[in-house]
Image 1 (cartoon, rainbow, N blue to C red):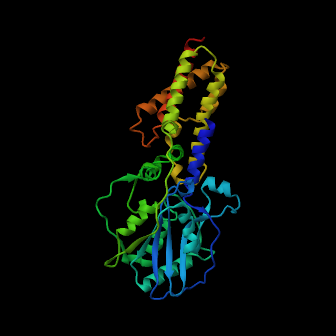
Image 2: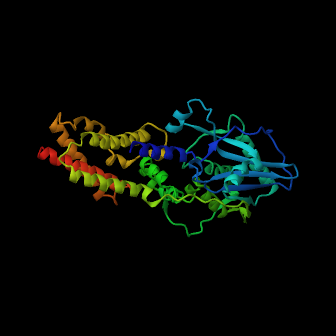
Amino acid sequence: MHMVFKKGIFSFLLILSLSFSAKAGIELPEHIKLSDSSYIALITCDPGFPLYSTFGHSAIGVFDYQKRLQLVFNYGTFSFNTPNFYLKFVSGKLNYKLSVSTYPRFLREYQKTGRMVVEAKLNLTQAQNQMLLDALLVNYKPENREYMYDFFFDNCATRIINMLELALADSLQYHSRGTSKTQTFRNLIDECLVDKHWSDFGIDIALGSIIDNPASEKQKVFLPNYLSSYCGSCTIGSKPLISDTKIIVQDTTNFPKLPFLLKPFMVFTILFFLILALSILYGNKSWLVADKIIFSTYGLIGIIVLLLWLATNHDATAGNLNFLWANPLYILYVFYLNGSNLKVEKWLTFFFLIMSVAVLVSWNIIPQKFHIAFIPMIGILLVRLVIRTLRIVKPV
């Protein structure tokens, strides 16, 4: 069980990166003069199956075939060579950077994996193209290219809309289509995790109630597909921002399907009924070792939840109410399971029993959406807590 939760939490940390390791990129002059035949495009890449590509990717392409320019400005890169990389990554203090590559090099990964790449040409004048490129070149200076990454509010997609607003100022306007539904940040990321059940499970353990707040249309652009949709509803002056869209790489990916019995809900449901059956059949036997493993696992989850909340800079891990059922005090509890202090064991057992029942009863009113697999997980707790309560009240 320890390995399951380690995999889930590590999945959360990886998919929060939404990008990939890369070198700083090619060197560019401080100023590039574009010709009248140049254009700039929003590049949107479909999600992939590897964890780092779960949510897709966005970049800005600058094209001037008269001057043989095919550049891609990419805000979603970092380097594994960063000092204290893993510590900074886990604590949410890892700097990401703007890198630049050629278009063919950028497309190589997507062509290899069959992930669709869409190029949306921006309906800009030559002067506006120049302003946007100038702003990107300033941002690409060594002293400016790094930034403190935030999965929801400052990533490869949000940086692009910020650059468009910076370069185009008030001429860029968003027009609501009036058909969008209210969605929370959790709803939005769940759309990308339909076939990634264990990643979804890990995220729902690690991320807190803060992501159950509704996201505005502007806030939704942290996801590349929503950035594309948002730009499609923008105008530049009296013209639509997007003038032409074409598919550069066709989608040929086939994501593997997880067998039904290996999905988190089914795994923990089977485990629940197994522990329930064994507890009924062998209720009089000593479960000391098994109970220590079970309760320490839940306590470890609770400690991880609190550390992600209190000891990191990840805004999305704040306000995590999973500690209501995965309580860090379970680590303390296991030291009293041997009967060394029946009074402390009794009160802790009653406390955990009440908390577990309270979570299930108030499931739909707790201001955080819990993963459905947490139900059988809490059920496992209830089975063992009830058994221990009976042993305390009527010692065997």
